[in-house]
Length: 459
Image (cartoon, rainbow, N blue to C red):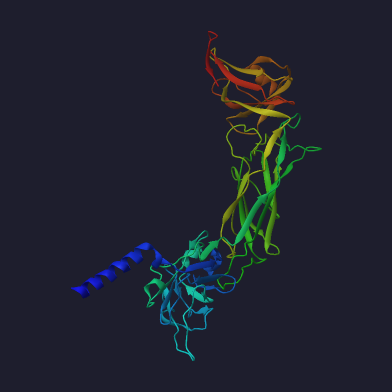
């Protein structure tokens, strides 16, 4: 009975020690992350060289008041799916050997025995504060790094110490990931911007300048090697024979063409796609220039600080992808949030997308009010449903501040050359341009009046 009490007491003491946390006095793992070019990993089939103890590192430090005893075990575990493709090894600060005794090539884990093989005059424990450093190794199955934005960790664990409090009771991980991946390039889209001149006679067909011009630079796209690692574990570079396809979306009404890096294209809806823009000296740097067709009202692409007229988002975004026969990087995007194309010398006021001719006693009217403090010139911009170019004409050159007026549909038709709306079956979209400084208080609406003179619809 007495012997039983001693054993029971020892078990209680051990449980208390475990519960107190002193037995959890684990070593620490600090890594310098190995960041890979995801495209290079894919090109290498998921086999990579990990430059530990070089461009990257993974160092385990023995906890205070503990040690790694001779004949204890130290296990390294790679991320799921990874396995060693060459024999892993350790460097230690203590005069002791560290032999790989389990796992290794073909395995996700590698287990080392401290103090094996035996040497003369003998191995010693790795003391508190001592370190074990992982050395360069080849790894296969790293397919998770073929996707940009991956973040993966390793764990290590000391076990099989005679003194249980020297063990890491759970695997030790690091605060930083051991492996990450990126697209292979750093992308920026900066600078640029323009103003659309609303004053007569251009009426929003040209960009503001001295004199007005048909061209505007909306910024420069730059793609530069991110410096991430290639599959060989060395910093990757981009080939000067590489190219990229750039896609930019915006409001491009009235734009006839655009140029980037010597590649000129025409818009497809509200999108420009520049195929195979070339790299030079490990960098693609392409200024994006828009060219007005000088035939119709250009649309603004406002940035922060400029008023939005109608729906839209500030600035521009370029999406990039590898060009033909290019495998050195993955696609991505870059924003130019401070860029803009905004109106100047006036404002555009949408009025109606259903302006019709008069018939059956019904009459279409345009009501314009200038609540500003300066007079304004009022122009009508009309797009017939039947297609063709936008039609423009001057409605009023002296709409005084603080006044309003009403235009008959027949007056609009007479003021806009080429416009014919003979009856309600002929329709058009109507916008007005208010020209002059400080005309931000001009408003307009389209009215439909029945034969009795009662307004039956307001747009």
